[in-house]
Image 1 (tube, one colour):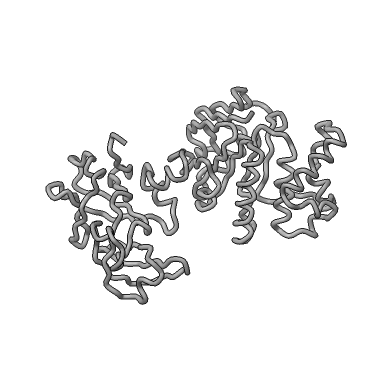
Image 2 (image 1 turned 180 degrees about the vertical axis):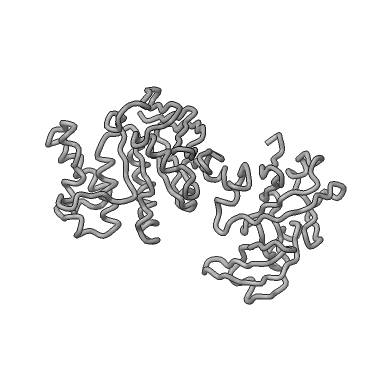
Length: 369
């Protein structure tokens, strides 16, 4: 079992309100990622679940069992920290097995569990080595092995991959995803890396200043952000935000440079009667340069821009341009534009773009959706 429930959870550090009224239920077997900028409260939330921090108010329940006032050892949790925290004079085998004897696990069962975990993590050939003889990725596997060797209700991960280089992080993300599928246990994972969150999570919980801004599947948050903070945090490069006027008579948005863009059918269903101005949110991939042999794209709304700076990455190219005083970025085919300072027409997938109230920063969606 491993269903976690947080009820009206608060945490204060003096006058700092680090966790502010968090309400959250994480079902058994789900891979949930807590993500947000530095200082948003995600690690404090994880450490409070583990019992390493005492919460100021609220309740923590595991499978409907209150654990708020229980010691960490009595909550049946396993945790992987940002630092590997391996014992330098113990072998890999001994590091993974550490803690099992104190739980009175029989020696034969310890040996069976350690070798099974080591095989899952592809470190079974390293069991006799010391931590100093291992690479960073191997040490992180040992730290993960020490956690999952226990039969815990919840497995907690506090930015475990942040000390690895980019390639190792990518490999370990795949390992963690596979491991979660094999174990079928509840994983709660903290990261500041939105790419890591998108690739790992069944569900993302995005925090900001101790508050849950939005919780849902990665695509829910990416495609239907509830506000500008969520929209701007997820995605690289981040979403473009362009101030626009609303021309309801023409069912169009008026851009700062005077260009008009027709609203999509779903956007026409919005009640815009109280809005003279909006913030138009569109991701770089919502743009497309229509080539001569691509049917259908010419019916999309389009804007004329001058590509000022090109940023090729190999598989795609990002082009920067200005609309009035606002800078924006479009994702382009790497062979579509060969140089900077070129005038191009960009088609826009309007039905995928977002509209935000400039006063509240909240996204506007049709009430029927």
